[in-house]
Image (cartoon, rainbow, N blue to C red; front, top):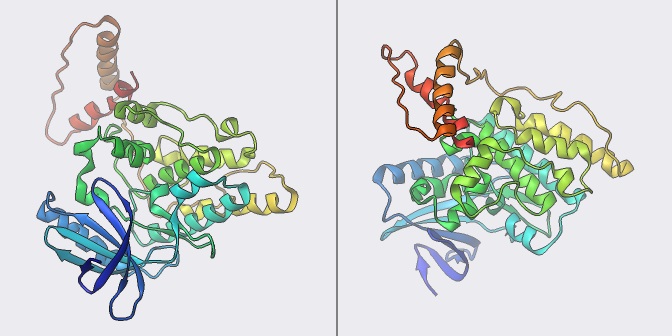
Length: 349
């Protein structure tokens, strides 16, 4: 049996291209723990510093819905995270092995929304929410979120975007603004989009967009509307389907603005389904209030210039002839923002 610091590794639980997860125990008191070993040999020192800072932030949180982090150990070319072991499996494993009914969905979804709302209120964005990073204890019903951007910080996944593991584990769950092709900043509402994809997969068995081609998945997140969950699984009530579609809005401004604003809608659905096995349609997001003042990230006052760029692009796309457009202006006037605004229609074509 291998030892890492004051911890003994018992057996390997799973292995990915950049980490290995073990079950073990603390030598002093036999406390059962999960040990996640992440290779740091290819990471920059600044990445490691950010990783450690994030660890300290999460460690100070006292939330039932967050996996507790006990220790951080640096040894050789690796970093080992010592995590709470509450006899759980990932939601991904649950989806592989069993059917999740609506009652269980409501139980899981309300707990996730509540935890996410509290995290966002504390100014923490997960950035990598997906079934792999959601743990469920079948015996107790506990649901906890883990892996707060850890793999994103350490592995620089954008450099390996064609890797099948990245497609399977990350691209299918990222928000449109996370693709880097939307000319939009990333804020806490990116987690709400990823939560919507997770809900979609729980109820239909698959995420809304699937492909082995990275650019096709990116294109789908930006330009394709998902098939309504109700159409993919006829047993899903329409209000639940509508909630998921709202979470999957391309523009962050059109999603729920607060996970705690999502929570009353989920509870309303759960209550009616439990009492009548029927959910009447209702106005969504009545209790949804933005966590902060968000200025819509949209281009204003450049309609004529934007049309010129789009006309030039359309001509190239339809006739196949090359073209050049020069954009001039004083520093800071918004040239880059204007040019980046046509990323979305370009990807859509």
